Image 1 (cartoon, rainbow, N blue to C red):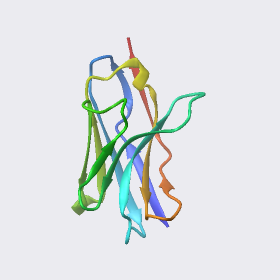
Image 2 (image 1 turned 90 degrees about the vertical axis):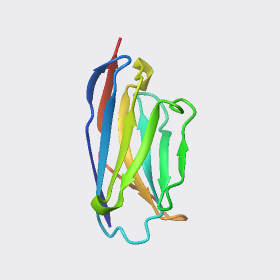
Image 3 (image 1 turned 120 degrees about the vertical axis):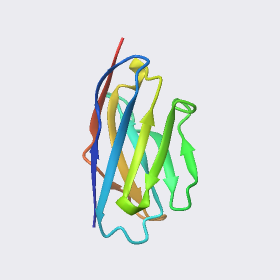
Length: 116
C-alpha cells in the first residue's frame, strides 16, 4: 500500500506560477515512476508529467516547456513547478505512483485554478 498526499494548489492569475508537492509513504519499495495527471470537469484525465527512478521525464504536449517535474528521493517527494499558467490549466491535479505492469496509486488531488 502506498499513500500519496498532494499540496500546493490554489488560485493564481494567468501568467503566474505554482509549485505542487506530492509526499509518498507506505510500501514505496519497487515504485518505478511517479508523476502528475490532471482532470477538469467533463474532461478525461490527462498526463501532465512523469519521472522515473532514474530521472527520466515525460511531459504532456499541453505543458511542455512550461512545467517541470522533479523529485527529492531523501524526502520521498515529487514536485511539479508550473510556470506561465493559463486558464486552460485549471483542473484537479493528482499525484500518481506505479510499478510497471501494476495498477497505479493515486492521491486525492489538489485544485489549481487559473483566472484570466
